[in-house]
Amino acid sequence: MSMPELAPLAPGVLAWLADEPAHGRTNAGVVVDEDGTTVVDTLTVASQWEPFAQAVEALGLPNPRMVLTSSHIEFCGGTSRFRLPGIYGSAQASAVLDQPANPEVFRRLFPELAPQLGDDLRTRPVTHVVNEPAHVSAAAVAVPMTGQMLQNLVVVVPGAEICFAGAMCSFGVTPAAYDGDPAAWADSLDRLVELAPIIVPGHGPIGGEEEVRDLQAYLRACVDAEGDVSRLGDGPWTEWTGRHWDVVNVERAAMLAQGDMTPPPTLLERVGLG
Image (cartoon, rainbow, N blue to C red):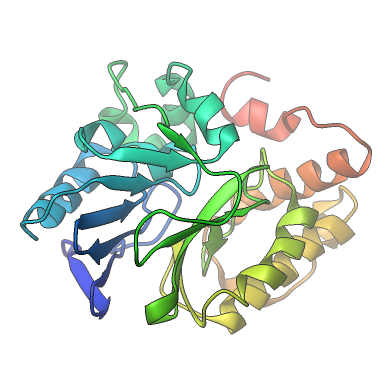
């Protein structure tokens, strides 16, 4: 297995891309400004965030800012490794990260990473809540979105025409909408494709509008299935990894259509709470 490295996408814009994209194996990003770096997401476990942090430190610049696209552990696991930056996140992410982490749930969600998800896992809280589009630096704009959670952020670098979509995009990997809203997520992607032509997803390879539209079609298919995963049908997602999330996504969409915002029973069973 090769070790990821910071890949330059444009002057001052770098991506950290997982070597084997999957849930628990996410991407991250770095935007360079005159005053230092903005880190976008911090990966899941130490074997991922430690080399990423070392690569950021090797740039030899201050790191005053971090933006979290989601409070799911895949995107915020390494926040404690980056001790100094202010942390920008949504109000929902702030509320979640004010609470203690639950490593036992994470171990059930990501069994292959369980040995690294110890009971001593700690994440840092959000220090700056972003409720509307805002420049977090001269080069980077944090834009609120909804879908993967009820409140997400993406980071746009207008000068490079690049969007770090983080949790809002999953290319070639089945998304997990267990506490999001597949219908709202699909609608939000219409806005996302207008932000930049180059999209760095949270899961999978760099893409653009075509990949976003494939994700959108999948999410709408989950809604149209009306709770019956056998009605999901075929599409670009037929070849995606992580298809075990289909049943959760379909169930979540059907429950929301009925006004039920409780966690899907199929998810609770998976994490040992059902």
